[in-house]
Length: 243
Image 1 (cartoon, rainbow, N blue to C red):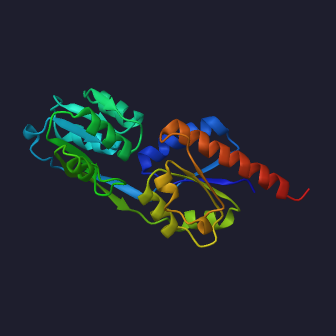
Image 2 (spheres, rainbow, N blue to C red; image 1 turned 90 degrees about the vertical axis):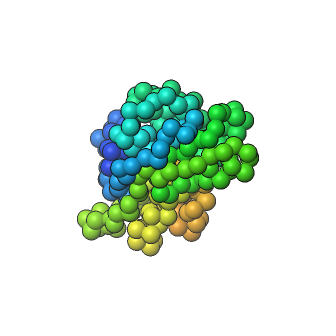
């Protein structure tokens, strides 16, 4: 049985990534969407007039910001390319970071932008940017403008996972990694494509047959990582299949 690709991102991001993956791998790849969290935007922003610099570490935060206000006259930092593209599309002019919160915080510290800064974020983050920048002397506040609400795996998804010999899963955040471990049955043969070392560190080696970290923390590198894992697992399945 060919490996199953399980995509657990929020539904909009899951659909986009699945479409690119299907175009890359072709119709022989089975891709199952099973979001483990739902994005719920919060209606209110803090008073923006006191802030000079905005920081975004996800496209969800950009969406929530853009829907809540028409203000765009800020210095703006985006964690990586996808978030930067979203910020540009809504009328901001982002300075795009290298892909992780820690690296972005170092960039902001070195740039010494106008302060105070405001990190607009979800209710869970992989790295405390405001804490880091404040400790470095760059006044930074943060505001939660969307929630990441956990979702259970439906019974039919669990049944399909139990049928599959090998599951290839792209994981985009440490919290997503933990939700995945909590949701899947014990003994699942996981091949994990992790967007960063921080994600890989959440997953015990005993819980995954294989963990590979993407070369860079972005969508194209994750796409390539998943394709490599799927191709490798597919070859193994072929060798194990009765002749």
